[in-house]
Image 1 (tube, one colour):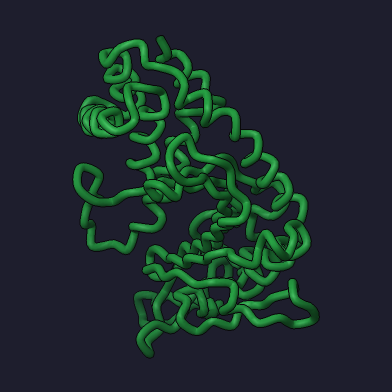
Image 2 (spheres, helix red, strand yellow):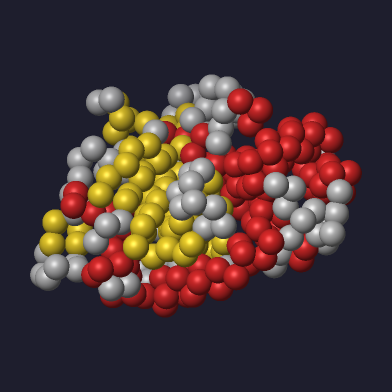
Length: 301
C-alpha cells in the first residue's frame, strides 16, 4: 500500500515549522494494541501466557494480529515516531528546504512494517543527466518486525531511481521498556551530510568508461548470482544505449533494480503483503554491494 502526500497535509501547531500528522488517507494512521495471550490445556482449562503478548490492529472492522512478542517489548506507535521525525526535520532543516517535501507512506505484512519516505526537491544536486538528484529520508517502524530506522537516501528525478546511502539506528533501534524517542536532529543533519558527500561520486561515475562488458557481466553475477546477474547485465545494456558504456550506466542498472518491481525485476506473488519491505531490502542490498564505490571503480577502463 502506498500514497504520495505533501507537507500541506500536516498542519502547523506552534509555528510554521512544527507539524504533526493528521492525514487520514495514510495507511500509517492506525494504532497497535497490546493484548494478552491464552492457551488451552487438555482439560479445556485456559492458561495465560505471561511472557508474551499479541500486537493487534483493527483492519476492515476486524482485529488483525501483527505479531506475537515478548512482554518486555515496547510498542512505539506511528504517530509517536513520526511526530518525533517531524520535529527532527523541522529543526534539522530550514523551512525553505522542507516546504516542498513530498511524502509517501507504505506498509507491509498488514502494518507489521511501516515506511514513510520524505523526498526533498529543494535539497538536490545536479544529475549527470538532464535533471537532478534529490535528498530523501526513509523511516521504518515495526510492530514485532524490524527495528526503528532512519535511512538516508537519494532519488534521481530523471528516471525515478532511488538508493539508500546509509542508515541511523544506534540510539533508538530496539523496542524495549527503556526506549524513549529522542530528537532526530543529529540523524537528519548526518543524513544530509552523507547526501552532499556523494555529489562528486556521481560525476566520477558518469565520466569513467567501463573496462569491458565481460567485466560488468562478471560483477553482476558475482554479487547477485547468475540468474539475477544476467537480468542486471541486460538492464545495463539498456542504460548504456542511452548513457554510454560508463560506470553511471552500471550504477543506473543497479538503482533501476532497487526501484522497480516490474518486468525483469517483478516481485514474486507470495500472497503476502511484502512489496514495500522487499523494495527497501533491495535498496539496502545494493548499498552494501556498492559500498564506498571502490567495487564500481574497479570496472573502469
